[in-house]
Length: 100
Image (cartoon, rainbow, N blue to C red; front, side, top):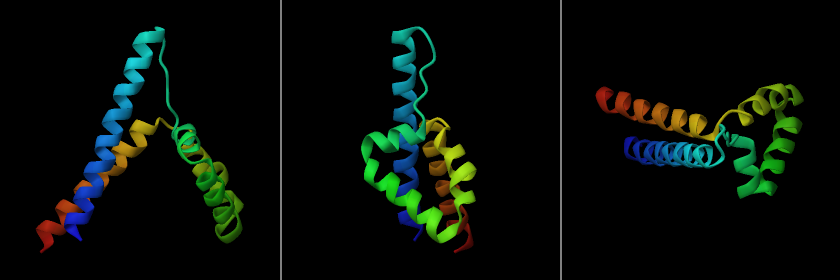
């Protein structure tokens, strides 16, 4: 379990670092800050899965969970969400390692 958390955490953290680099490169090219929101990245990669998750959340949880909850997170920079999730998973893996 710990190994899986570490690998997934490292993958998310690496994706966050790469996206931060892409944002910085685009920002230097245009001369203004270019933000890549998580929702846009997800839609560009797989629009069908985004729509599926939206319908599942709204139908089986509650429409209020999707909006404003998840929609707010989807407007955040992708590098921050993925990097933060990666850091959280790495910390969790470390806590599991200490407990064992």
